[in-house]
Image (tube, rainbow, N blue to C red):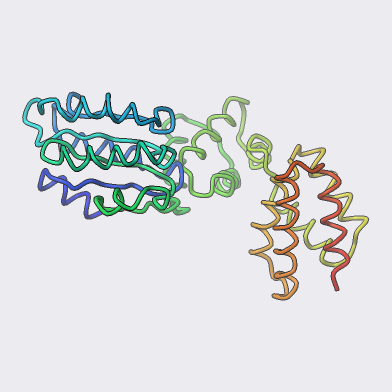
Length: 292
């Protein structure tokens, strides 16, 4: 991001909010920014806390306040406090944090990392520059995976890269973990291995299930459904989620698609409430088959 480069060049920055999904580089970006701006003294002038673990007001009043009140060490222009998953903190601790951000602006800067910036109170949002991180693009994930494969000397099918990206959906941390888990099995890494490890069905099987259901072929669709649930070990909730993802990418009449999405939302709610996976998924298939 250009704005981060300007912060590094000028050796100064405002309070920041890094907002975006998991595994897209928010924490890494914060660490790089701190190292670049603070220089050799970065470790002494940098405080990292996971706000979801230390989410109470006492942490703000003790650890953060004590750190901000301390003298800046070395040639660093200020101290940096990095709070990860700050959207999981309580409202009281956020209000206390806002006061610390106001009080110690001359000596400290705050970088707040979160999945949803809307969960932060307005006074904090108004004091920060909000930088939004999007899921990584396909080519970015592929480049990272191929670099790892080359460095580690792994044997990976081309189709396995597609499977990893499909499962990770732009989350580089998850993509790396899946690749590592697949390597632990030994031998060549294939797309079948990736789907088995990740607990997701092959998207081709999901599309086939949807196509059979939309054609009204209940017996074959039910057989396919049972194969996916029992043979591939997919939970009902994961199945419905994957059906929703694949339905949006299929060539389906818009009226049928609208009814299908309504059904998927209804059954997703039932499964979240604790209903039996097999019974609800078979009922879902039956309703899709019964559509005109």
